[in-house]
Image 1 (cartoon, rainbow, N blue to C red):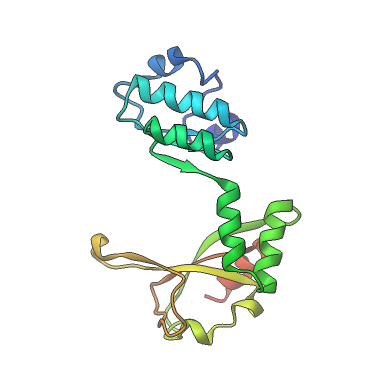
Image 2 (tube, helix red, strand yellow):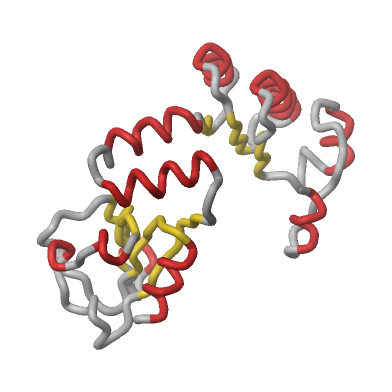
Length: 193
C-alpha cells in the first residue's frame, strides 16, 4: 500500500508502526498531524494508536476496529475516530433493506465481486437533474444509491452536506450528488451531466 500511496503523490514509508522510534524519526512532535491505523488486526491498530497518543496527544488518530471491547479501550485512550466496518455495513443494510439495487451494491462491496465506488456527481445547468426534486429521480433505474447532496456556496462556511434528503428536496445546478454504485453506473450518470 505504501508504494501505491507513493505512486499517487503521497508521502509514504514502509516500517513497523508499532515502534515509537519510527514516529519520532518522522517528526511526531512537529510534522505529523494525522495517523490512520487501518490494518486488519484490531490489537495492532490499538497498540499503534495508543503508542502515537502517548508520543503526542495532539495527533489526530483514526483507527479501524471490529471488536467492541477493544474499541472501548481505544476510546478510553482518547483515539479520535474509530471506524467499525461491520457496524457501518449493518447500519447501511438496515437503512436500505428491501431496496433491490441497494442490496446488490452492498453485497458486491462485501463480496468484492464488482467494482463499486462512492463518488460525487456534479449537477450542471440545464441537465435532467437541474431544478428536479429527489422524488422525481428514479435512482433505481440509474442503478445508484443516493447518500446525500452537497450544496455548494460561494462562502465555504455556508456549504453543507444534506444526508438522505427528503423526496421534496429541490436539486439545483452546482449541487453534487454523493452516490454509491457500480463504476459503470456512476460513469453513465456523470456522462449525462
